[in-house]
Length: 230
Length: 285
Image 1 (cartoon, rainbow over the protein chains, first blue to last red):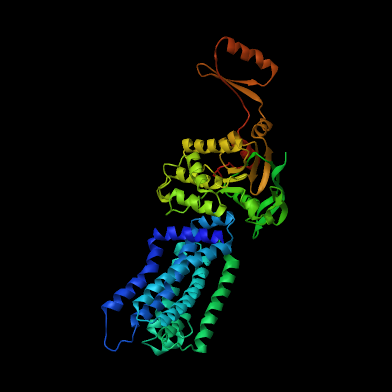
Image 2: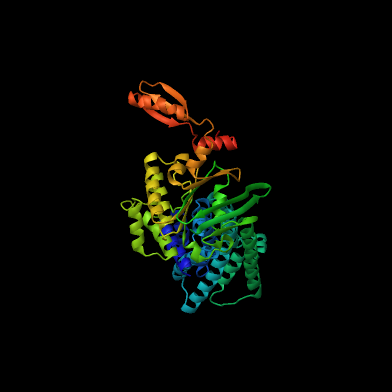
């Protein structure tokens, strides 16, 4: 446990000096506040921008940041030295994962606060965000573990992130995209966020999100066995 | 004296390429052992096996009496490793880099200050690593390896690419560690480093140990010419047989104060390596 906490503390210090990762955590929460206050369109659903940016945040921030962190550590050999210093791979992954999760949940909290939710709705919102962030973290860990360099990680993470974060938005305008998008966890997150106040949980949503999560876990185990963390 | 490390018949392949062939050696506690070889000889691979990061296909390796395949947190806590590529966090300060590892090793913070002073980086403790010179990064990397009161220190090319003054500083720190009884496993392709620091060396070429022993003994063993090279004042160089007959001649030069220098013709480690492997230690020959 102490190694996990040490990794988290180190990562906090590092992120504060790493603009590339830091901006991932704060960009959408800040955008949400600005857009929610600045733009009002007649007939716009309640919390429209909150839900839109929350979904994009889930698909983007955890995925890109964890993949960038792992890939950078591999590229610069810091991970190799760390693993030689009696830090187990699972301790490292849990440390980094927990850190990104907490950072993203803080961002989610800001997004939630920007919306007009009652306490219970807010808690449901945060729960949905937590599930989405964990799923994204798994996908990001797959990319980071597979990549040898940050450049490789970025070249894969960006298109993957665009699929997961933009599909829910595009599906609002195109029924064909919507048919495909519904099989992604981010689309289901979007659906659930839009139903926060009613809390209507469709069995399909649980199945698709669980399926996505399972797929990413399988992918991670395959990639980890092939590439390891070095 | 008990052994700090034992390698017995270690072999390993990466795919079809065999990178280590039946490597055997023993290192006593408190000894400085040097593994000399060009890049790609298998030095880092051997360190990885000895520190439990890689598993050999044949043979066995023991570290502090324990099989390297079963090293526990206790043994890991007694090992310090300095790799040739630093592995430092560029955006963190020198102090924060050590603080992170101090947390991992459960070392008190006072130890960080002590180590930073020991390696001469105390004044630069707040400087972020990306702004340190290569020599300073090397010393910081060494400081990290020394942080947990290591019993065994693995150093992979510790002075590679450093200027002579900085390399000497590193050597001084290593000599201090030796005095404290730390066992040092050093890989290098710098023959002077090996000669000045190591109690025993092994020459590694293409995954095989081609010679093992004390540096001076190895050089003497390959002194095929077995002659004395005398340089007289004025620059004249005379080659004499290493025999009783030459003693009178040397005495004469000394009495006439003609002697400038005298050397034996024993080869250095570079030459021995070249003779045995057909290539130089830097790997470019």
